[in-house]
Image 1 (tube, rainbow, N blue to C red):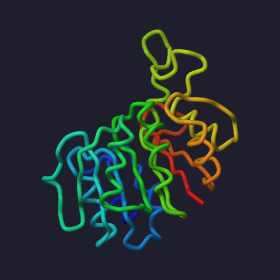
Image 2: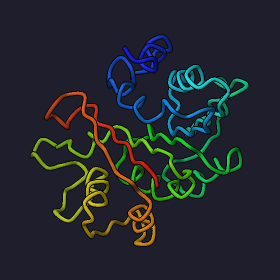
Image 3: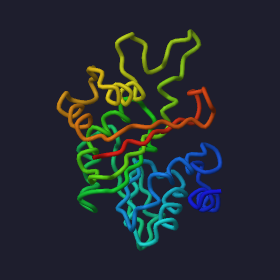
Length: 212
């Protein structure tokens, strides 16, 4: 069992016991020493505790749409921001100007996932990693078998967004400008995906976007 998984289980984060993201994440974060880490979505504070215990004296910033100051410690800071509003997300720069690690475990709404990455990726340090979680929402369908996120054939899901960038496919989305898309494309080393259930992208899918 990986160290991050053991700590995650002890802290009670679903990243460890349900989604099983932690072994995948540890491959990318194990070499960081006291990184600045930003996580969108605080919930019960379990993952913030996990990151704090794993890294020690790092600055851990949790962003949530409601007040989560009850989870603050010497290393954990929180702020209130609406993920759907880029100008609010940028308030995280008042705490740290750059981050080695960013995690989107927020609303899981496709438009929010895309716009958040487009907004924050420039503030990810060179050599840093951006984890975009819960991409399975890009594959969910309604009773008619139509993807919730893709009712029109030309709609781009969050998974499509990353796949297209990784494979140098040209596309447009209302959730990111052409300049933002090009910046991510130009500054990404590689993008990797992880699914808890092999060959099933309808539950527990995450990704790691590695910055040059």
